[in-house]
Image (cartoon, rainbow, N blue to C red; front, top):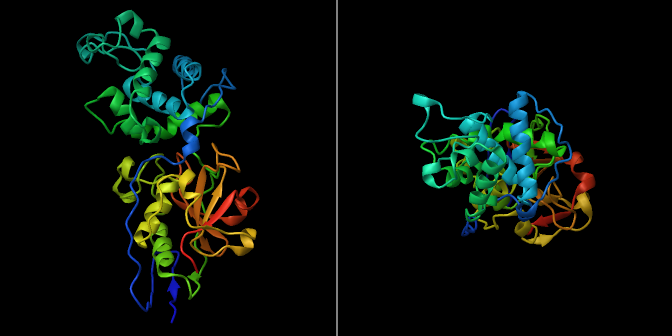
Amino acid sequence: MGRVVTWTAAGLVALVVLIGAAAGGVVAAIFGGDSGTALGCLATMTNPGAAPAGLSAEQTRNAAVIVTVGQRMKIPARGWVIAVATALQESNLVNLGDLGPDNDHDSLGLFQQRPSMGWGTPAQIMNPDYAAGAFYTALRKVPGWQTLPLTEAAQRVQRSAYPDAYAKHETRAAAIVAAFTGGGVCDGGDGDNSAGVPLPPGYTLPADTPAPVVAAIGWALAQRGTPYTFGGDCTAPHSGVPARQCDCSSLVQQAYRAGGVSLPRTTDRQVHAGMPVTGGTASLRPGDLIFIPGSDGTMSDPGHVGLYIGSSLIVQAPHTGDVVKISSLSGWARQIAAIRRVVPT
């Protein structure tokens, strides 16, 4: 006996007739991070004269200093995005001096660092180059900062009274950094900035689709429209909490968790999960994991993953500034690095 599963574009409607119980499973520990390759992704400031949209000349100069210092200190580009987002929140990328009665204690400069807390002398902190270096030095000391959601990494450095305030600047910070690097921010994305595609009318899964795959695809489709967050664990994508939203690898991990199947947390480990699928796209079955290089990987060490749902479609969490969505397989077909089948058919 098989099952018939139907989804509609307006909402998720699953009609499942199952014989037997679904397999149980234990979820792998959540380590954070989209891809192992992102941890060491060292971008290059290829466009130092960039004029990021919406920034004044002063803000542009300060953003350029933050990126320049990050490159000099060999901080991965993810760190540049964290630093720029932090400065946007703390000072709007303006090198603020003492504001008198409006000042927050003795906070100064781009990152509102405090001399009384050991960040340096007032003169040092008011030097954007020094301030950026001090921020990166502190960031490096945060365990696993590369795989934390941006707002968590920034908060570990800043210890702000508003710990979630940095999240809202991530998309803008990524765009600012991308202006200086020519596009790379090392979040593992596939570069697809389209609105995604809808499920086709009458979309169904084959009757012999294994129950864990049915559950995984259904769960992943239910997260459409939720924001991408690099390092988010995808345990509550609709919550509005960045740390609980999805990146590409946590989306597929949590999707399969819904089906009782344990997957590793990061793309560099997921690419070894299950068994390889040979024969290219002609051999794809719903539930297969498709790996591509993305913005920070290679064909031998892919940095991005999506879940194949049949009908030449993939559900994925693309990149910073985008949402979980359905994409056409055709956009990935020429860059597929690996295909893995998690549940035997």
